[in-house]
Image (cartoon, rainbow, N blue to C red; front, side, top):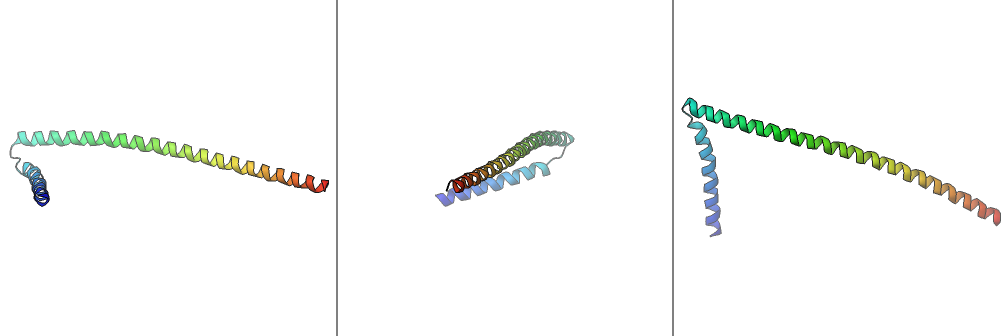
Length: 101
């Protein structure tokens, strides 16, 4: 039954692909061509709108990524400064200890 269901689905998929091709091949009148052209232009506008939304989202993500990278570099610099300061304090403590000894 699973194989039968799989074959039926493949037939439906093939029919849908063929049906779409037949629709375009069977355009015979100016009215049908106008309707098809109107549909295609609508799809074009829809895809352009979606593209611009995705482009905007990408630019926002790139801006956020850039901000995060700047913050990361600032934190790394701050950590390096703190580490240098702590190393300096350790040296001072060691010198004081040596002087006491």
